[in-house]
Image (cartoon, rainbow, N blue to C red; front, side, top):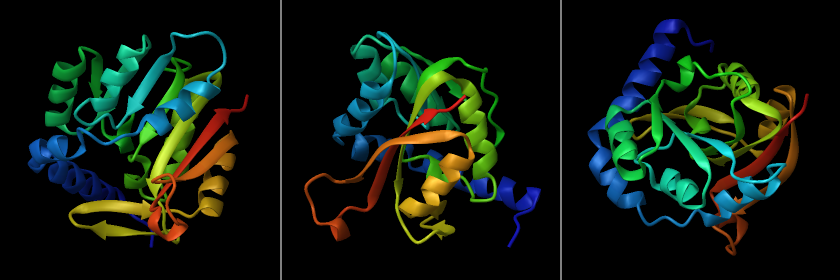
Length: 209
């Protein structure tokens, strides 16, 4: 079923409202999550010498922005939830942009890396090719995009107040390849568990062209 502009506006507004209403508890609940594996996966594939210009897409309250800054990089955050933008600025001291994922306004060839941790699954499938191409454009040639999404069987819909699209590896590969990326690596999280206990698919991609 094709989503019309009214459907897309509803998806954005209700999903963002969910995060806004739960901003404080979300920050507390995710503050100590260990995503060092994901941060390392992005950084090791970026060409050239650090420090790097990194876009933390869907930065939330700023946990990972702080880490990138502490490592000496030049991160910029982006989130659509007003409270998260305020929290991330206060927590990290970094520049943070308030933008809706479906209405991005990104500068061309601005970033060496884009870190999209637990965020791109909120983009409806019909809009994802456009959004991925916008991210491609925001990367410098040879730049790297990291993504981590809850995996599924290529279905999408509402889940506990948020809209989500749940891709398997083949489906995600097709989307990324069609958007102009080449795969560098992928893995499942949490690390060290049986596959059925690894709900997250993480992958790293290089801009081609």
